[in-house]
Image 1: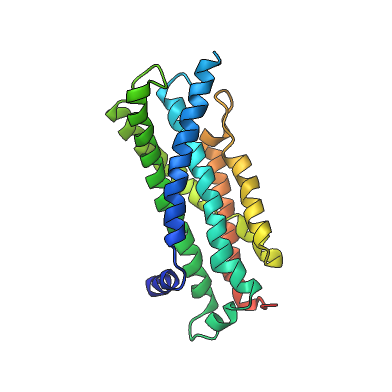
Image 2: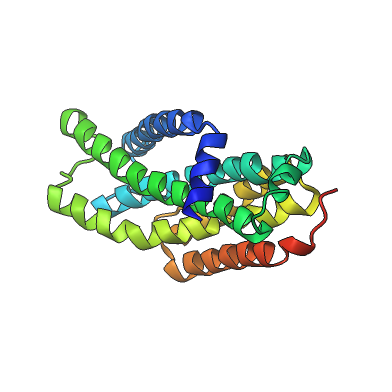
Length: 230
Protein backbone atom coordinates (compact mmCIF):
# COMPACT_ATOMS: atom_id res chain seq x y z
CA UNK A 1 0.00 0.00 0.00
CA UNK A 2 2.77 2.43 0.93
CA UNK A 3 4.53 1.71 -2.36
CA UNK A 4 1.32 2.43 -4.29
CA UNK A 5 0.87 5.72 -2.42
CA UNK A 6 4.42 6.72 -3.32
CA UNK A 7 3.69 5.92 -6.96
CA UNK A 8 0.62 8.14 -6.83
CA UNK A 9 2.71 10.98 -5.42
CA UNK A 10 5.19 10.59 -8.29
CA UNK A 11 2.44 10.30 -10.88
CA UNK A 12 0.61 13.44 -9.85
CA UNK A 13 2.63 16.56 -9.16
CA UNK A 14 1.07 17.83 -5.97
CA UNK A 15 2.98 21.11 -5.99
CA UNK A 16 -0.24 22.86 -6.98
CA UNK A 17 -1.92 21.43 -3.88
CA UNK A 18 0.78 22.77 -1.54
CA UNK A 19 0.72 26.19 -3.21
CA UNK A 20 -3.06 26.20 -3.07
CA UNK A 21 -3.02 25.32 0.63
CA UNK A 22 -0.61 28.18 1.38
CA UNK A 23 -2.72 30.67 -0.57
CA UNK A 24 -5.86 29.34 1.11
CA UNK A 25 -4.32 29.88 4.56
CA UNK A 26 -3.53 33.49 3.72
CA UNK A 27 -7.04 34.11 2.34
CA UNK A 28 -8.74 32.40 5.31
CA UNK A 29 -6.70 34.50 7.75
CA UNK A 30 -7.62 37.70 5.91
CA UNK A 31 -11.31 36.77 5.72
CA UNK A 32 -11.48 35.82 9.41
CA UNK A 33 -9.83 39.10 10.42
CA UNK A 34 -12.16 41.09 8.17
CA UNK A 35 -15.34 39.32 9.35
CA UNK A 36 -14.50 39.78 13.04
CA UNK A 37 -13.42 43.39 12.53
CA UNK A 38 -16.62 44.31 10.68
CA UNK A 39 -18.77 42.51 13.26
CA UNK A 40 -17.27 44.52 16.09
CA UNK A 41 -17.29 47.78 14.14
CA UNK A 42 -21.00 47.46 13.31
CA UNK A 43 -21.79 46.85 16.97
CA UNK A 44 -23.02 43.33 16.34
CA UNK A 45 -20.60 41.13 18.29
CA UNK A 46 -21.34 37.45 17.65
CA UNK A 47 -17.74 36.57 18.56
CA UNK A 48 -17.19 37.44 22.19
CA UNK A 49 -14.78 34.75 23.39
CA UNK A 50 -11.59 33.12 22.14
CA UNK A 51 -13.54 29.88 21.62
CA UNK A 52 -15.74 31.70 19.09
CA UNK A 53 -12.64 32.83 17.21
CA UNK A 54 -11.25 29.31 17.01
CA UNK A 55 -14.62 27.89 15.94
CA UNK A 56 -14.76 30.39 13.07
CA UNK A 57 -11.21 29.52 12.06
CA UNK A 58 -11.89 25.79 12.34
CA UNK A 59 -15.07 25.91 10.26
CA UNK A 60 -13.36 27.97 7.56
CA UNK A 61 -10.34 25.68 7.36
CA UNK A 62 -12.29 22.43 7.39
CA UNK A 63 -14.74 23.66 4.77
CA UNK A 64 -11.90 24.78 2.52
CA UNK A 65 -10.03 21.49 2.64
CA UNK A 66 -13.13 19.35 2.20
CA UNK A 67 -13.42 21.12 -1.16
CA UNK A 68 -9.68 20.63 -1.76
CA UNK A 69 -10.20 16.91 -1.10
CA UNK A 70 -12.92 16.79 -3.76
CA UNK A 71 -10.52 18.36 -6.26
CA UNK A 72 -7.92 15.72 -5.38
CA UNK A 73 -10.57 13.04 -5.76
CA UNK A 74 -11.55 14.40 -9.15
CA UNK A 75 -7.93 14.36 -10.35
CA UNK A 76 -6.80 11.05 -8.85
CA UNK A 77 -9.96 8.99 -9.29
CA UNK A 78 -12.81 10.48 -11.31
CA UNK A 79 -10.76 11.85 -14.22
CA UNK A 80 -8.89 8.54 -14.51
CA UNK A 81 -12.20 6.75 -14.97
CA UNK A 82 -13.58 9.41 -17.27
CA UNK A 83 -10.48 9.40 -19.50
CA UNK A 84 -10.13 5.59 -19.22
CA UNK A 85 -6.51 5.94 -18.09
CA UNK A 86 -7.51 3.84 -15.09
CA UNK A 87 -7.39 0.85 -17.48
CA UNK A 88 -3.60 1.15 -17.55
CA UNK A 89 -3.44 0.83 -13.76
CA UNK A 90 -5.91 -2.06 -13.79
CA UNK A 91 -3.57 -3.91 -16.14
CA UNK A 92 -0.93 -4.05 -13.39
CA UNK A 93 -0.59 -7.29 -11.39
CA UNK A 94 -2.16 -5.56 -8.39
CA UNK A 95 -5.77 -5.83 -7.26
CA UNK A 96 -8.12 -3.01 -8.13
CA UNK A 97 -9.05 -2.73 -4.48
CA UNK A 98 -5.49 -1.89 -3.46
CA UNK A 99 -5.10 0.60 -6.30
CA UNK A 100 -8.25 2.56 -5.42
CA UNK A 101 -7.62 2.20 -1.68
CA UNK A 102 -4.16 3.76 -2.13
CA UNK A 103 -5.68 6.74 -3.93
CA UNK A 104 -8.32 7.31 -1.26
CA UNK A 105 -5.77 6.83 1.52
CA UNK A 106 -3.54 9.45 -0.05
CA UNK A 107 -6.47 11.88 -0.31
CA UNK A 108 -7.41 11.24 3.33
CA UNK A 109 -3.82 11.68 4.56
CA UNK A 110 -3.33 14.93 2.65
CA UNK A 111 -6.68 16.23 3.88
CA UNK A 112 -5.92 15.40 7.51
CA UNK A 113 -2.39 16.85 7.45
CA UNK A 114 -3.28 20.07 5.63
CA UNK A 115 -6.41 20.64 7.71
CA UNK A 116 -4.53 20.14 10.97
CA UNK A 117 -1.57 22.29 9.96
CA UNK A 118 -3.79 25.00 8.48
CA UNK A 119 -5.80 25.30 11.69
CA UNK A 120 -2.56 25.88 13.58
CA UNK A 121 -1.13 28.26 10.98
CA UNK A 122 -4.28 30.38 10.62
CA UNK A 123 -4.82 30.55 14.39
CA UNK A 124 -1.17 31.52 14.85
CA UNK A 125 -1.35 34.22 12.17
CA UNK A 126 -4.54 35.59 13.64
CA UNK A 127 -2.97 35.76 17.11
CA UNK A 128 0.04 37.65 15.74
CA UNK A 129 -2.14 40.08 13.78
CA UNK A 130 -4.41 40.60 16.79
CA UNK A 131 -1.42 41.54 18.96
CA UNK A 132 -0.76 44.49 16.64
CA UNK A 133 -4.24 45.55 15.52
CA UNK A 134 -6.43 44.39 18.45
CA UNK A 135 -9.15 42.90 16.27
CA UNK A 136 -10.78 41.27 19.29
CA UNK A 137 -10.96 42.92 22.73
CA UNK A 138 -9.19 40.05 24.48
CA UNK A 139 -5.84 38.29 24.29
CA UNK A 140 -5.34 34.85 22.80
CA UNK A 141 -2.88 33.15 25.12
CA UNK A 142 -0.43 30.35 24.35
CA UNK A 143 -2.25 27.94 26.68
CA UNK A 144 -5.54 28.62 24.91
CA UNK A 145 -3.81 28.06 21.57
CA UNK A 146 -2.45 24.68 22.72
CA UNK A 147 -5.82 23.62 24.14
CA UNK A 148 -7.58 24.44 20.87
CA UNK A 149 -4.88 22.65 18.85
CA UNK A 150 -5.66 19.51 20.88
CA UNK A 151 -9.43 20.00 20.65
CA UNK A 152 -9.31 20.33 16.87
CA UNK A 153 -7.95 16.78 16.40
CA UNK A 154 -11.31 14.92 16.56
CA UNK A 155 -12.92 17.53 14.30
CA UNK A 156 -10.08 17.17 11.81
CA UNK A 157 -10.51 13.40 11.81
CA UNK A 158 -14.24 13.90 11.25
CA UNK A 159 -13.58 16.34 8.39
CA UNK A 160 -11.24 13.82 6.77
CA UNK A 161 -13.95 11.17 6.76
CA UNK A 162 -16.56 13.66 5.60
CA UNK A 163 -14.36 14.66 2.66
CA UNK A 164 -14.92 11.18 1.16
CA UNK A 165 -18.67 11.70 0.68
CA UNK A 166 -18.33 13.35 -2.77
CA UNK A 167 -16.89 10.05 -4.07
CA UNK A 168 -20.44 8.68 -4.25
CA UNK A 169 -21.70 11.50 -6.46
CA UNK A 170 -18.59 11.61 -8.63
CA UNK A 171 -18.55 7.87 -9.37
CA UNK A 172 -22.18 7.76 -10.48
CA UNK A 173 -21.40 9.26 -13.91
CA UNK A 174 -17.66 9.84 -13.52
CA UNK A 175 -18.44 13.54 -13.21
CA UNK A 176 -15.87 16.07 -12.00
CA UNK A 177 -18.50 18.86 -11.57
CA UNK A 178 -20.66 16.51 -9.49
CA UNK A 179 -17.68 15.61 -7.30
CA UNK A 180 -16.74 19.21 -6.55
CA UNK A 181 -20.32 20.46 -6.47
CA UNK A 182 -21.37 17.85 -3.93
CA UNK A 183 -18.43 18.84 -1.72
CA UNK A 184 -19.85 22.36 -1.54
CA UNK A 185 -23.17 20.94 -0.38
CA UNK A 186 -21.34 18.85 2.24
CA UNK A 187 -19.54 21.98 3.46
CA UNK A 188 -22.84 23.85 3.81
CA UNK A 189 -24.11 21.08 6.08
CA UNK A 190 -20.94 20.20 8.00
CA UNK A 191 -19.46 23.67 8.44
CA UNK A 192 -22.53 25.76 9.15
CA UNK A 193 -21.44 28.32 11.73
CA UNK A 194 -23.67 30.37 13.98
CA UNK A 195 -22.67 31.46 17.49
CA UNK A 196 -26.11 30.44 18.78
CA UNK A 197 -26.70 27.18 16.90
CA UNK A 198 -23.51 25.88 15.32
CA UNK A 199 -23.53 22.58 13.44
CA UNK A 200 -19.78 22.81 12.97
CA UNK A 201 -19.24 22.17 16.69
CA UNK A 202 -21.89 19.44 17.00
CA UNK A 203 -19.55 16.47 17.20
CA UNK A 204 -22.25 13.75 16.80
CA UNK A 205 -23.17 15.26 13.42
CA UNK A 206 -19.52 15.57 12.41
CA UNK A 207 -18.76 11.97 13.33
CA UNK A 208 -21.95 10.82 11.63
CA UNK A 209 -20.94 12.52 8.36
CA UNK A 210 -17.47 11.03 8.72
CA UNK A 211 -18.98 7.56 9.13
CA UNK A 212 -21.03 8.10 5.97
CA UNK A 213 -17.86 9.09 4.09
CA UNK A 214 -15.94 6.04 5.31
CA UNK A 215 -18.83 3.72 4.39
CA UNK A 216 -19.01 5.24 0.90
CA UNK A 217 -15.27 4.73 0.45
CA UNK A 218 -15.50 1.15 1.75
CA UNK A 219 -18.38 0.25 -0.56
CA UNK A 220 -16.60 1.85 -3.50
CA UNK A 221 -13.48 -0.20 -2.86
CA UNK A 222 -15.36 -3.43 -2.10
CA UNK A 223 -17.30 -3.38 -5.37
CA UNK A 224 -14.50 -2.08 -7.57
CA UNK A 225 -13.68 -5.51 -9.01
CA UNK A 226 -17.16 -5.69 -10.52
CA UNK A 227 -17.26 -2.15 -11.90
CA UNK A 228 -16.76 -1.81 -15.64
CA UNK A 229 -14.87 1.23 -16.94
CA UNK A 230 -17.20 2.74 -19.56
